[in-house]
Length: 208
Image (cartoon, rainbow, N blue to C red):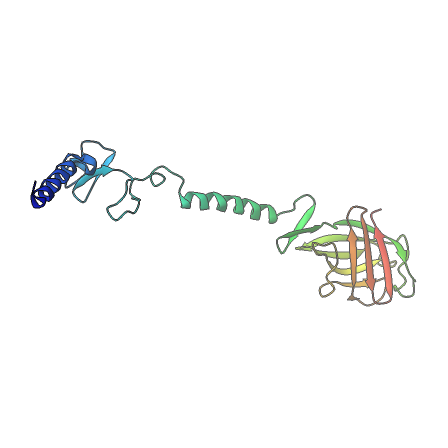
């Protein structure tokens, strides 16, 4: 056979094979023209939902995960709910602690007695056994009031941080009859003990 005729025969055969391949699906104009509801009309041919687009991309319309699958918004909503719940817990007293800067700090509310002073003169005459009441007045902020004005223990404001130390920039305490000064110190929540260092005065307090 002449090579020219052979090439024509091969071309016709290839065209026939392509014509028999129904992978492109039934001709259509609308999705409703397709016999199967799982097919959509793409480039005037019925094709499976979620199938490849003519440019090789994956269809997002009706494809797996787009209809009925987990949505990004749904995930964010669930995360938001967890976050809201966590913030709600931070907003109240949790396990005996009060919130400050999103963290928990020890709750010092109640009565505390002086259990040690390094020197009564340095501590304004405050002595072992004298008591003060601490009450919550803000986030991790406590107001100390001596129970007996004539025999004072500590009076003033204590701000305790999450690491159980006092914030010296916000803690101002009068020991005994001394003037209020900035104090440092710490809380031992496990042993219910407070240590204060106010200039020359070092004082320990404990729960009675």
